[in-house]
Length: 314
Image (cartoon, rainbow, N blue to C red; front, side, top):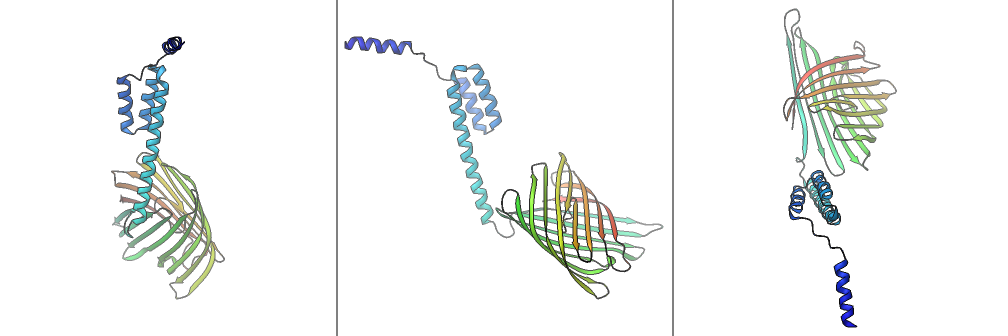
């Protein structure tokens, strides 16, 4: 009886199909692809291996599962390390931005010289981000000052979730030719990121605002209102970028700002087209419209500016 069982067991083993392991050259190709960490390359090699070795699908699936798990663990570890570095960064670390400068000169019937400069920096944290902007535009025509504008803006943001954020805004601007020597604006509210892609970004925001204006004649005005903003960036093709921002404080790229209060409505539209020259250097053409529905006596409601500048990113 015992001999019969042994014979039956041996016969069963001999009748069970046995699959050979994945051929060594194929396994070597898969291992080489996995070593690169490139998921697309691994998928391509795995698909070829599956077609040429259909009986080894289970082993290929196991290799792919192990690769995916290892990759997820590495990405999770890298994300934790990146977050740790951000949280431990000093006050002057993790800032990025761009500076731009432009100049003009003409002589003959009109003697004109002008210079403009702007600096925009941003610091991205885990939950908080900070945006700073400075701009100056000065021009003299036939010996008299024909343009003198200065701007400084600070905007902190707190990211509530992937789309929703809160913002604060403090802005100072000066334009004596427009009738005011100093103007201080403050706002805070909610915003939402509609698109956040590698080539397309769009966010909107709104909130109450307060503004104090000191006029050149010595008078002043305090007013409450509302701010509506839009920030838009579109990478049209590699090296060519269109930006448009609707924001009281945003001037880089393109911007549109609408502030409404009981006595005056201010709209600031700035649209720019930026072409990349090198990794850090770009050229930018921008067109700006500034509108005040109730300007001081002697000033006009609408100013427009076309500008060509060099931009350096850092």
